Amino acid sequence: MTPEQALWKAPMGLGEFSAQGSVRQLVPDEAARRVIAKLYGLVSLDRLEAEVKLVRWHDGGQIDGRWSGSVTQNCGVTLEDYSTELKGEFRVRVVPVGSLHAPDPNVVEIAFDPEADDPPDVLEDNIVDLAHYVLEELSLSIDPFPRKPGVEFVAPEPEVELSPFAVLRKLKPGATES
Image (cartoon, rainbow, N blue to C red; front, side, top):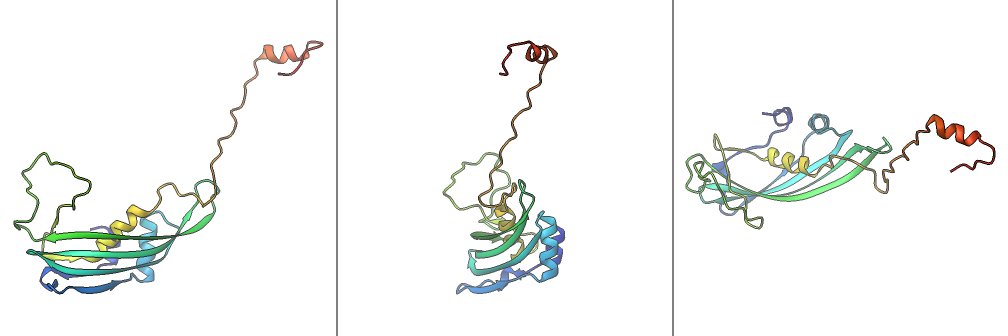
């Protein structure tokens, strides 16, 4: 368990998922946002909120989430702080251990289809931590090389090393600088 999960949790048992579905709002408190910001290398996590729809899926559940947040990062070029609005959506399916719908752990090679749904996550104890999935999506959306909008990195011109002979050549009468 990571520190941010210990501080911000939103547990839900698989038995609480229903065929009709239910919606939950998730918002970490200020203390949790401070810890999350520190762990993700942010100046601050000013806002994070998510709405997740929970629906029964076979012997497990499906989580459809929509989240948004506001992060403050330090620009890697100007070293100034700036804020960015982030948002995203995700779909995760979860199943209990031993489910017929769980991925086969004995399969060594899988066919990769980028358009296909991800295989379901297998839960250890039939408890889903909804906050974990929101934080996972947030962490994937944070720019690892933050740059304030409109700022471009311009590499400095390399210094030209003058040899002693080039310096002497400049001292010669009638020499021009090149």
